[in-house]
Length: 182
Picture 1 (cartoon, one colour):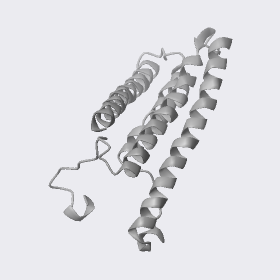
Picture 2 (tube, rainbow, N blue to C red):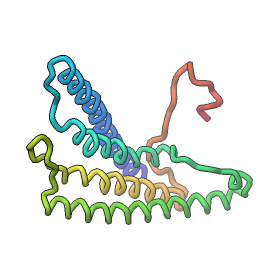
Picture 3 (cartoon, rainbow, N blue to C red):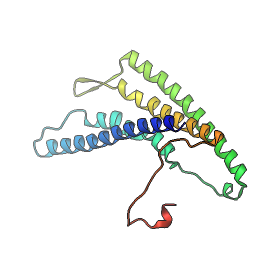
Picture 4 (cartoon, rainbow, N blue to C red):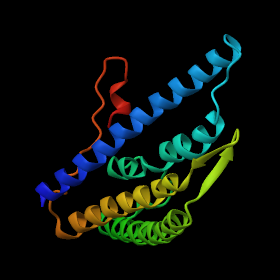
């Protein structure tokens, strides 16, 4: 069971690394556009399109799985902390299964839309040029499918009582107070 979890974590890590590269590309692209615009009076064409259609969509949706894997989603535990452990575990299983189901449905629907845009050859006209935008539609189904797989695997691990094999967040640093890392 841990082998599968580690494989899922490895794939999530690869996608996270790709996301970091895209973030650096966004910064480089925008910086180059500003330099070209104000220093050489020759702005790069389609910068706003690439930022809004490619970079921002990828940066927003690809890391969903790593957030689920690290248990970093926003949670309000006003009442549940006071429940008995078995009720807390039941609620955790239910919420994890619901997360998996809902995100799988969203992945399926956004996947259908991505295929429609691919088949239509979706593009945008920028500065008299045709820029393909259909590839950006695939970021959503990939992101939602990944979070669905991570949540499903977590639910299986909770139900079986075995270790999931998914990586967990480790914070190291003398500047972080010890009580925040618990």
